[in-house]
Length: 188
Image: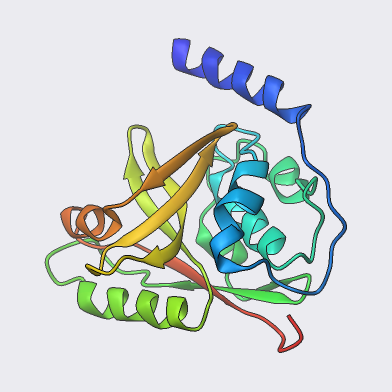
């Protein structure tokens, strides 16, 4: 109960401190993703981490303003949502794809998942990933791969920024997970 009250207060306080910018058809430099997008974004509802992650990708490509929260405001605290809600969905010229919808067990193709993520990162695209959390699953955005091969992921919980530097380790312990990739028009 205290967690919900604290989360509500964080959301309430953070919603009036929103950074705005004009949308352009061009992505933000990779090294500025954290400072420009993540730090100026908020997860508005306790269960809106999926649309929150999608909004961060849209902001990364500057196809929406930094005060864009339409997806979360529509979703609110939807309890039956998943990546499926955005699979093959085109938003502002960017099409999202749900991948690795498989049982999380010993037969999960973790190496294939990691190769897919590496391929996306090399193509300068982020990857939305579902990772276990205290209350179930939470969505993160994989932004880079370290020299030792580990993935660095970011997310938001209210206005609080979450950073994981051991994403591969978490995925291995979970016996796999789903991801969302996307495609963009060449002009972005």
